Amino acid sequence: MLGVGHMGRGGWQGARGRGRGGWQQADLPSADDAGAWLTGRLPDGWFTEPPTVSVDREEIIIVGELPPLEGEFEDDAARAAAESGRISRWREDTRDERIEIARQAEHRYARKVAWGAKLGSTEELFTTISAPVMTRLRQPERLILDTLVDAGVARSRSEALAWAVRLVGEHADTWLGELREAMSKVDDLRAKGPEL
Image 1 (cartoon, rainbow, N blue to C red):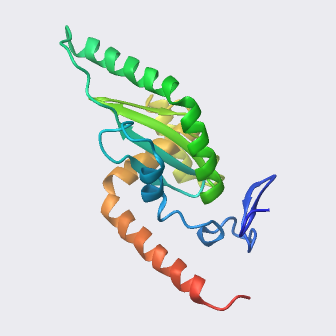
Image 2: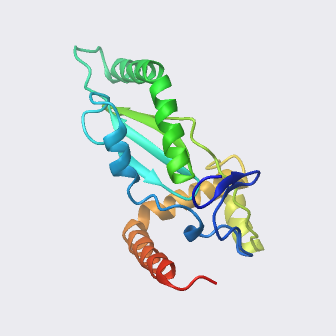
């Protein structure tokens, strides 16, 4: 058993367990320091700057910038191919160390860890998870998804929903940031309250 919870058949089970509304953010260990911890834990020389670390309830994604390529290339396609090849080499060369760092981070933060690398205009993510999300949509919402499928924007309702979520995320970044900050304050206040 780990400190405040453990990995059960259904995933991380925090000290308060699972409520009627599903997992709550307060059930997971805080990952507020994940970026700093990972920056300190990563070997020197992997990336040209501290990596970008993004965290949600299921996953931590670490993406770092690799040192630039040297030499000239025929065109943009040749450069992109070289960038992809260098990212692939870095992925293979660092595999064992990345697995160990991920194991430690998963134990510390109770979330899966995925990696990625950027080089020039190429970015690749490795072994990210695709978490299922259950939802009930009424006909007007289903019709929107079906229109996206019929127009060829997406191959399925699931893909159309993911596309719509990405679109909202791109256009509501400031608002979503403020919302996350407010939720963090609520979590802090909840943690200071009495245990039931």
